[in-house]
Image (cartoon, one colour):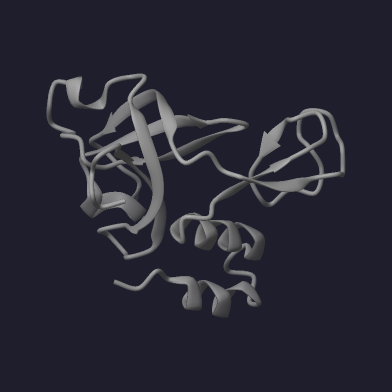
Length: 148
């Protein structure tokens, strides 16, 4: 399975992709994800030139926490066309310290009663391919799932 980084780099100069987001996605996929943090500790994700909280232009890359905590989930049964073959799937927001990430929560049963996707569950973030088109996406997996 390709991580898609070469294709993203090739497309970055053609306006089809966002180079700084693609760089972030590649870093997350390599296990070296990061957040952009201002001196006041506010976190954001690329692309950013200023902190969205305080307006500071002093943004440093800080390592993303290794694990995050699921804050909310939603099971998607009627997806957008880009995710048609992925449905049903669980979408989640997880807290990773200074930032919250949105991604697909894999390793849980989207057809279950929701108990597999408990709020407060610890997860790891990674990058995997969408079933529909093979494009990369942020994925969460429960701690202990060997796929991340």
